[in-house]
Image 1 (cartoon, rainbow, N blue to C red):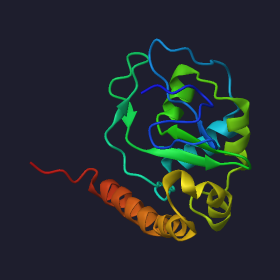
Image 2 (image 1 turned 45 degrees about the horizontal axis):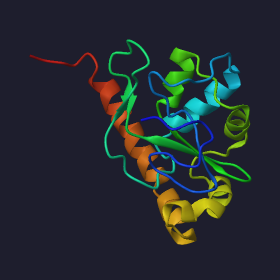
Image 3 (image 1 turned 90 degrees about the vertical axis):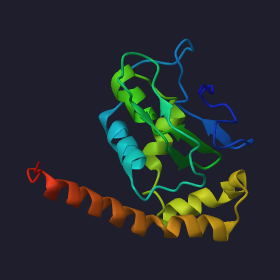
Length: 171
């Protein structure tokens, strides 16, 4: 599903403070170039954080159609609040950067590098001015953020169980 970079709408948000990032699609142009490894590392933290702040449930997976990517897809998004706007990207943005050399706008790169940990108090404080984007108030934003430890714990337990099960498969 394509939305132009820095446009005011995307699949999960619309509004004057919304900035779509990384909603790429075959046949549509996108910037290509090198990106700083520190940015990639921070982006990965935000994208893969089991406790990331998600105001809506995805309506289905989004798959990469930019090349022979063999089912690379995702159902989640990443939300990065900044001073004057909130950036919204599909979780596939990490794949696009690492595999297809997508170079996001420099203002998004700066916002990712400056963004506090997902769902932290500092993150919530930066996000609150944009809560109405998802028809939320302060209580709603804090309620979603409060679930982060529970989500992180469940993800860690699932990972530990998968690791413990390795090598113990029986027919």
